[in-house]
Image 1: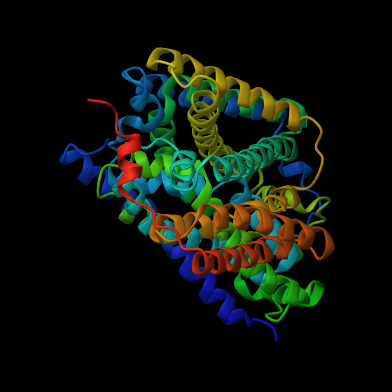
Image 2: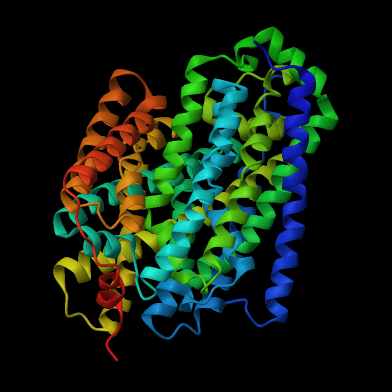
Length: 40
Length: 480
């Protein structure tokens, strides 16, 4: 049973969207910690 | 399409320039963040006050190693779709560790290492068995990282393997020495951002240059087994990798030291978020390897597939990008491993076995000497490039998977006893190693974890202990 091109595309696209958004989430969290004086 | 990568590779001078630039940045930051470290807690555990953003990033960066950026493409190239999906299940370990991190902080707010827990929970015999497993694994991981550094630099720049490996080890040792865990965690944040942006860009490049349909049809034509969802070895690998990841995280001081270093209330959310954000990375990195047939590339060694595809896709820019990404991935894990293993040796070997009465000043000097010694030891073991990256990494699977149940049960079940935990680690490791050699690397962790689980459950049921949780706090609390 082979994975179809469409399923492969969905799997990789979803993964890629999360990877692309992650830096934004991290920088947002950093800014929040920084403002509250809770960086480390 | 051109089937060599030589035209896209960097020349040694460019390679040395990038290495020099990033080395200066990491070393400066190591010094900058480490200059205010006053006591041992500051150096070893970043003052035990790390917030959510740095907590998530350091967990992600440490778990994104050369094994993610290089072995994920390698595994996709060898085991296909299940190879990359299986690798992504490594994130389950991070997520399952989230409640454990909260429990560890609650039971041992003043603890230093995973060894502290095993010693206080199960006594000295289990502690020594655990230390052997833990240190063997730490060295296995260090060697795999050092080797990956040499392989990457050689593949992309032509700089001899030994030189590249030496430089990467030396840089990480230097900035970890200067800044301790604070330097490690601070640089981890920047390295995480670089890794995420770099891997994302390479994947977008593969999709826009080649397209899903072309990549899929080229793989279906030349390597159809990579798209097979019923490939037995790959399915075994999937479960094996899940358990291997859980074993690595549950026992290793790399993750325990962060549980101790995070501010109260941060550990659970940080590990859970890091796991969710880490999960797609091996899929994205692994997909790049599936572009090999469409590119018509001739890959001489499986562990070079990632860098080669990146270089082929976007020439010099791709080579530079992948070089920076893998260099960041290597550094972010090497520094964490150096710091956490040094903590383990300092606390459990030096203070635990050799110098129980050592004062703080002596311990700080010893911590730095241990980091230096670890770097030197790893360098010596990396010099001969003995085996491929994945083989070396998975050899330790049998060891670490045998610790999952003794650790998890030890944290939650007061009835789990010392003899059962020790036996579980020994039997699990033995059976895991037997499976590794008689069947294959993809079953070592699976069989080791299964035997360890049965041993813990049966011995807990037959000979229940009655452990007092307060002992963990009382024994690690500093004197007033």
